[in-house]
View 1 (tube, rainbow, N blue to C red):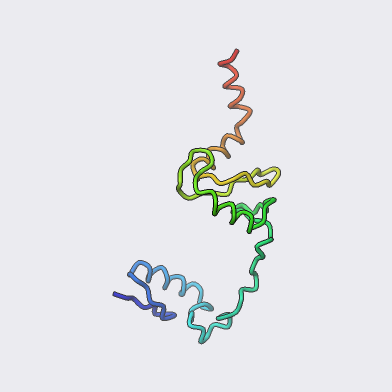
View 2 (cartoon, helix red, strand yellow):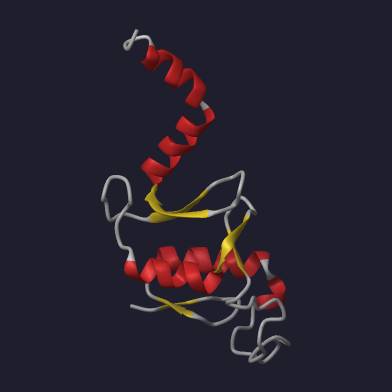
Length: 132
């Protein structure tokens, strides 16, 4: 069964996707008509299209030392977390001080590494107690 958006006429596969799509259309009235009849941006290239040679931008806004194209190529050849080997969703890891790209990590390893970097001195001090 198909469900049709009452705002733009898009056909959705189920009620859940229809509900989400209609909420989007309701909140974005300028983008309602996806067919192009009343949408001035229909068929045009986005104005803010970013070049593949532009630096890769992370979620936190950091611009890395690698281009978007280089990171994309790296992702095509690396399919597992570089610490634990899991194949789940991978995050782009980088040094927050130098903005250098380090590799791809799963979310758990990325969080753990960030926590370790923030608490490195305390952890090393604690571990040194066992060596004394």
